[in-house]
Amino acid sequence: MYPYQIFDKTKRKLVKTVTFACKEMFIQAMNYQLVLDKTLEEIKSENKKPTLLLHVCCAPCSTYVLEYLSDYFTIALYYYNPNIFPKEEYDKRLWTLVKFVRELKSKIRPIIEEANYDPSEFYRNIKGLENEKEGGSRCKKCYALRLEEAARKAAEKSLDYFTTTLSISPLKNAQLINDLGAVYENKYGVRYLYADFKKKGGYKRSIELSKQYGLYRQDYCGCEFSMKNKR
Image (cartoon, rainbow, N blue to C red; front, side, top):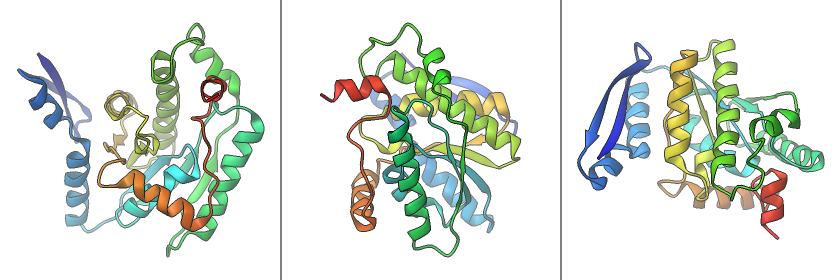
């Protein structure tokens, strides 16, 4: 059996859990692109632009997401990535993001807020999971760390929504990312924008835009463990 949690956006809490009898029905229920399409349709029909805190991991992952969402939201970018190693790599990714936003062909350029870079936050959260394989428990802890901080920051700034660019990567588990988003939506009282940005050709478009803007594209996720695993 496959459980699916339903959240009430107005009351911002779990309403009920529906159990599906087969995997196919479960997967259909969890199609986050369809969920996003519906959300954007609702926003468009209301003829307003809500505010969105977009957690960004790097410039290439933000390209398509910004292109896609800019017509629907007033976006604030939040660069919180204590997992990135070494510091020179962290700075290089941030500089590339700043470069992209400055050159972005858009009427309104989003503001970038850089969080404090403290790798100890990452190492405390993944302690004991250093030898886990990529995509496993260590990565889940890393996603959770960054998503919770994004939700906290969105609540602090009284923004309408928060989300992350992480799901654009074909190597990232969109189900897990969105499940975590739901947890922090409920905890902090800020709506989470459910999405799987790799869908609808999103990942391919991000590569095209990265080439168009001449962006640096890293060859590992970010932490020292993923850097070692690429070798």
